[in-house]
Length: 69
Image (cartoon, rainbow, N blue to C red; front, side, top):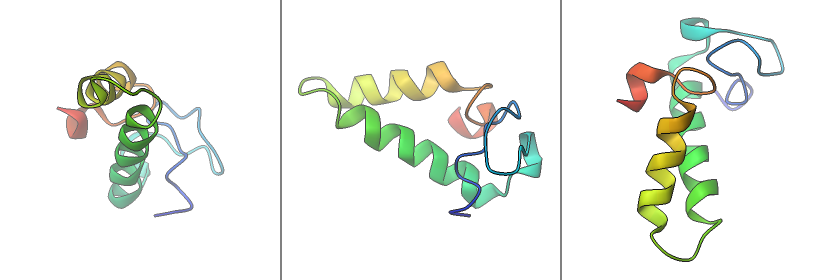
């Protein structure tokens, strides 16, 4: 799961170029958590809103849209 959490849902990620549901479920969940953590730690106000907005914007490209919803 850790190896694959940098894969992108649209296939543009690394290290193996996996796409969609070829990416292990655990890795897709870790990717969402990673985006939430990075976004929340990048601002000092309205961290929760910013994190959720960041996740929503990446649904379908970087992140699994089904899991984001």
